[in-house]
Image (tube, rainbow, N blue to C red; front, side, top):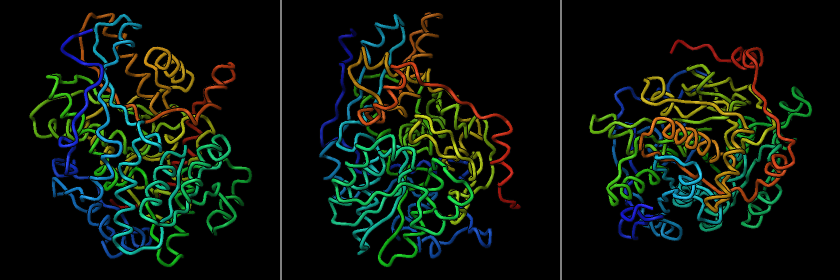
Length: 457
């Protein structure tokens, strides 16, 4: 053990950032604007305000303001579970016999079990401030729905969650946590909405997708008085709120005099990865430092590594705005594996632009290899990781083993976004040797690509 580097580095309350960092302000090539699905013209603030809270619309559209003040009420809520620790994985390093130094930022130390609460409390705050009755949302593995139900309970808001059907069935206890906090939870696609009934008619027996759940949640929000829709990933506003992760990480690294060489994060919609890398990517964009940044996605839903950079609908029902992103097509239905919240068909426009500009890398990994890494990590580090986080663990271990071969003492940093205590069905299948890998064929992907909208942008 390096006596100069503690196992865990904590900030004190006075060091928790009081501003969110807007990565777009430092981007030379800004993310493309959202398009109106009817006119294919950039969405205006007035149009977006019919779906999202007004203050969040301002954050969504602002490409130039570098820092946004975190309201005091949100700061106070953050203090219930922040700062989160920066951990040196000494035991994992020893098990791998690697000269690499491995660090992770642990975001699982709150009841929702993940980083999602950082944005959920912000979005609930702005909904309450606007005088709304409640909000609707979708959730994949359940972390976002859990976080939002907690945040809505705190502010006395109603919360309606549409949960991807396969996760609803695989993770009943995650569902019950949401209900305990007062949310209603509906498996998606459902027969409670027009778009849900349409999807069920076209795809009988479908296990659902985030795109399906988004469509249902948006329909309910736009047809229910006093409601707005909130989203747990992908959007610019969410990446903004999640920058608290990277900002804390940067301060902690500076305190111990360490600079990461490789930064690794799992990527589904992009909120965790975007928040983790934000200040480091900002330094890279400004020419102040350089980092190797790696996005890790499931081989079963490879938006970055096999997707197209194009405008696409954010939802399967094609009622949401179009975003320019790396996408597999809004009609792509991923296999019902255990990638959890990483089953979205597209990726954040911010991250998509950065990847397109070759400012970051992306790799895809198969789920058995992911659970190999999750199990190895759990046995030596004492934390049972979520399947999503375990994608980043897989690549962190791979990078550490490369250092073992070369003798390099690189500083490897990854985001541990949540805990896996509601993912025991997946762990059971892995432990019983019943877990299999699925990789979509080119023909499978072609079906999704064929549905991409035609635009001139």
